[in-house]
Image (cartoon, rainbow, N blue to C red):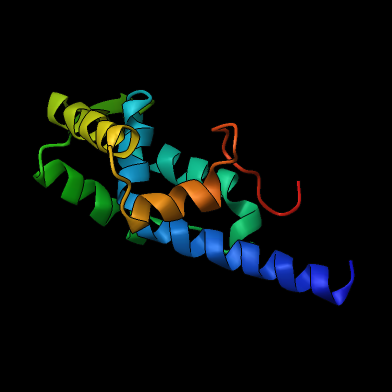
Length: 139
């Protein structure tokens, strides 16, 4: 890889890392909305999905659990204790309020009649002319 490609790759990773940091709470809510799960599974999934962006740095419980507690305090998710072998774990599930929040966010983004700068930015940067999500890193 030449120097220009390395710079682009570095910038792509740095940008994606910043983007994910900004939408982490919504992403975690969406992830829980895909099915009941526990904190460690969320951490493992995020680390697996974004391993190329983080350059080997891992997301830890000290980052994820405060977000989970916040989502629960807001009533967007609920938890219940379950046994995993002999160990008791907390399993998280999205609430109706959480589903409604995600649906409202989707409707807002999809149905905005006059796009503001944020939506124009998202469409320009992440959506191609055929309304498909753009791939990053020259893939």
